[in-house]
Length: 389
Image (cartoon, rainbow, N blue to C red; front, side, top):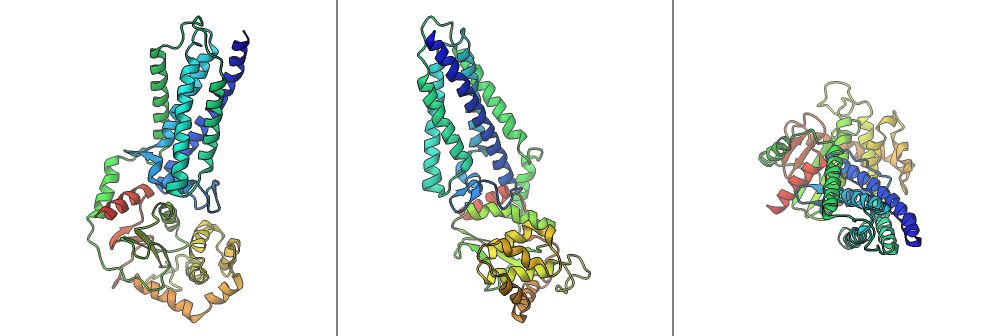
């Protein structure tokens, strides 16, 4: 009787922890899809400092199985299996063998936690808060399974192989439905996405003149160069920025990103016949001056993140949230003739005689023109193919 009471206390805790683990795995699956569809934000709640970066984990090649199935989908299935087994353990009829199976599945979960912790530290160089929460849960689940009393042979018929197989299959089906249901690209045919990739790969490249002092992120000697021509007030450019943001974290070498300003407003761009984005020219000058202080990436992402706060003469003040930036120096910089000359040179790069920019954002990947941008996962596929060429 005391053993039954012990099990009745431990099994609800196991059930609760496995439900929590499943909830975290579902959230990780959502984050995986958001990151790879190009809908992620620049600053995720679990991106803290230089160490904790969920975006870097989710965009890495270690977050998925062949075929693009997220590892977190397997975690959903695993936690559901443990949850159902804990319910079996509460039943006098099916209690026998529940401890054995719980030890097996929680042991597998703990093993994968240790392996992935090694991958995060040694191969990715970042940690994920959600992954660490899962690790804590897996340690606790295995410890609780070890404390479960051994079943007596007389305790009911136990969990048959049929019950176990049904539990595994049902859990995998539910996990599959979550993975597919959380995918914002789920309604898009794979053939259509493949066609987009092939159209880029078969586009004839052109020579892209890159200003010597254009802002750059990544490997200066990269095999793949992506040039982004954009306008800081353009909503589509913000979407394009979100789509390539995870790429900065996936590719530590082999890829570089170059940025060219092309404000869509006649106040600074003679190629635009009318007034369109009234703050775009000022924002471009601010971005140039942010780069002068070695803060280009922070400036770039902050401006896109605060498009709604743009106001004449006030855009530089938005950057006050960036640590270490000198706002007065930046404001003085925006008024310098040399800054206006840099913007003019960027705009000239986008003219019909050179890049022939018709809309923003426009990307050039190794000279192949991509208008409007692509989802992050398609960028990954194209870049990986070019790196292998």
